[in-house]
Image (cartoon, rainbow, N blue to C red; front, side, top):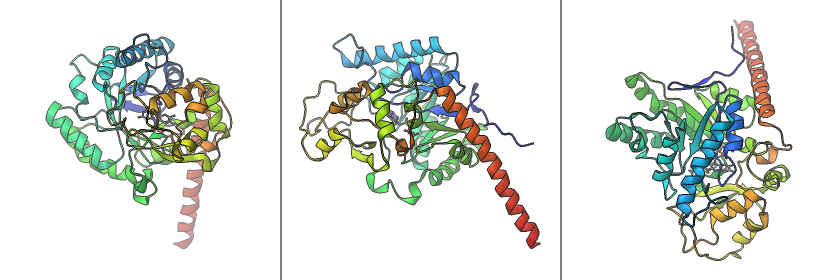
Length: 377
Ligand SMILES: Cc1cc2nc3c(=O)[nH]c(=O)nc-3n(C[C@H](O)[C@H](O)[C@H](O)COP(=O)(O)O)c2cc1C
């Protein structure tokens, strides 16, 4: 009999009933409220560490505030759910190691680490640690480099990978000229990554789940990827327009108001391309009306502070708070398709319903194919 529910996501001894990971969203877009709501529905809820100490930090030390902020959100989220929780820590953050250590001490279930290769992530794990380590990659090549380094230096095989394609929101792991190439489409990157992982899975007799993200919008997208070797999906943009999302209503409304042509690439001051919603602030940046600023934070290692026309952390923090005159919203390529704010429960139920519908349509298509074959023979 065919299963008409999604398979669970199994990472070591941890099992998510629903194979949906809510992608971490900084600054302050995915905190305890959103993450716990997703975890309560059986998915994995993820708190983003980026700039997490900026909104209620008590100290003048920005990095100290971030570590405290991350601890506080993990503690808060754990009180709101008994489900699975992760943190997203960008490798490029200047206090990456301290944030990782704090998350492990708070016994978070997963650390998702991208925006750079997390080459030394396993060094923070102690024998008693339960935290699973999940690198975020954009190619099979990156998967191979990480596996080889982790095995050689730490005898540690990644617990899973997130493969993020070019349709994602926020900072992207692709050069601008590659973003639209056929070979970089998520559906073409997935087989490449599965091929890299296969010999390691065989040798170590362990599955390394691949969670795919970037542009996944509905249940039929989930159906496609789960049927093509992915173990789960990572979705972020769709979770922005939920009641539980930690962004202000103004931020959420920018998603609802956005049209297709408003979703644009930007060159972020931290040296990576990004995807965002066009607004007057970004127009000013494009027209050279913003000028180099004095950096108060030193938060991202790759930030070109001397030349940067604006501070990305402050711009994103303003956007989180709804101050769009002084900031802008990061968003995935499908943000323009959103038109209402619903609860996380309703969103997950809709995705499950669409998934079942996709199975039925798939069965129907196969049946049709069979009929043709029968007619020919
Ligand atoms: C508003 C926003 C903020 C994001 N912030 C981060 C972040 O801080 N760290 C990160 O690794 N990815 C970040 N991302 C990427 C998401 O975690 C996710 O992988 C990606 O957006 C998935 O594609 P989707 O938005 O089309 O579902 C962000 C995405 C959005 C939309």
